[in-house]
Image (cartoon, rainbow, N blue to C red):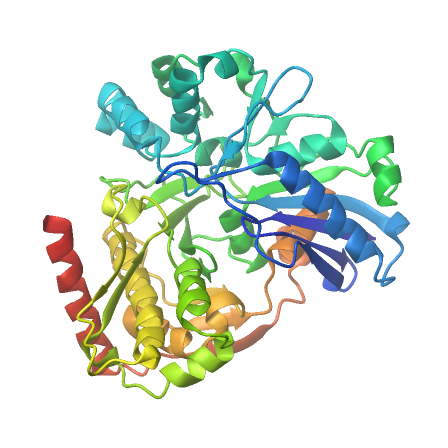
Length: 493
């Protein structure tokens, strides 16, 4: 049996077709090859058109089909991973009413703060495990106040993955994990939060039918199947946000296991069997893919908006045609600590670890007589690694103390310099795996379709590529403490 995984990223849609028998991808494809546009009509805003995701998903599937590596008629289940926290709203005809307000949009911060003050901090942290913050519920509140005519036409609200499943199947469903990432879920009552819905004045009718994450979320419509050369009736059996899905794809399912990713944004994601919450919601707790009322597995997520996007910006604007490996080679010729040059990579919206403040990306101590572009390249990767350490220290305050972190050999972890800076800043070894969100989504589909007897069986062929151990170089710790002192001075201004 073949499994199709679709990963709805911010920059592109990637698909993989996996052979369930071998657990290996037969082929992968993405569309577009260049990064998809983020629409920012005002500072701090970030939107994308859901119709664009659907168009790109179809083109990516057809591109994969065109490789000839498999027979599309052999695909038996579909899984979807997606960028978290986005808001998609449709009318009763399943037509999108406005562009999606995506994860890095900052406009809803005041609405989440109002909800926190009304519900109360203790109630929010014990029931929601988070402040309503800048998440999907607060984004919907912004629409209600600023676009009331649009709000009044809403039939259902969705996360990006729910939307793609709707386009495939015609059905609108969601899961506890999805609702928790939108801050709609009451973990004490195991139901949609009456506190959130009541304060914002949302009707329960706009919430889709809640189904188990690993279950059927509809079957592919005949007309869609025909257009994509698939069999009609293939079930969508898995939907998860990109970070829970990344953890799944790294076989991070049990308490104490931890995953990391360093793509456009950066995340450390640890699994716990305790309903934990950070007093300031600097790190956030959501239902993991294997959450159930009887087995409460949650993911504690530390997010940094500005990681890979910072490195990409430097490449495009200062790299002068250099590739990422060439940038890394130049950076490695400069000493640890970049000879005092420091970088804050916070130019991609409000950062949760700073209580949703927008600091902007900043260079500090740039010496025009000393520092070269190589110093800049190194300072950027060190600054991103130091931000991971800063966030991990917050997770440690909340009882998450990883002995090892699993990551995919991709994105920034392809850089030996970044990997070295990461393990030496955090003092935690990293295990690297051949990991991919779309492959994880395909394997998730196999779990949901019961092609695999368990999640453990789905990863029975999972192989570690290598381990990167900290060298305990004092130079990294000294540079981090200097970076942190500069940051705290900035935060206290």
